[in-house]
Length: 144
Image (cartoon, rainbow, N blue to C red):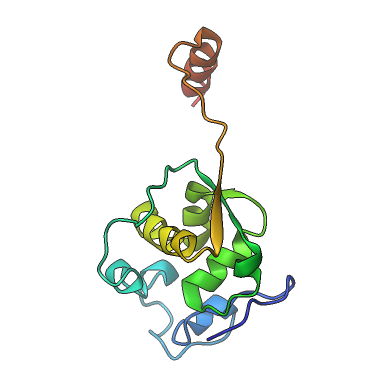
């Protein structure tokens, strides 16, 4: 178990992923195809689970709780708690971890169920009937 790192330190990475911490690794030799996000298979990270215990939308904002600040967790959970000191969407957490959204939903759902993270009310609204929004969206897509 690892305690939550101070603000200026990175959370603990899996020991065999030393390159995540900027240290040399005993992994594949230089030139070998190995992306850090693929060193541990998603089904190992989620223990084979594909659904979260808590339903989470991509735009749902999550932040650490007071219990989460004192929690002793390791690996991805420590990184998520460290990243969610300020409200972050599930999509942002997924991008930060470099993991698929489905994996992130399972991990964040576990932390919410353990009361280490909380889901904040999202400011989502029905934009289907908002012509100004649809026009801005069309202009943005056209600009791509």
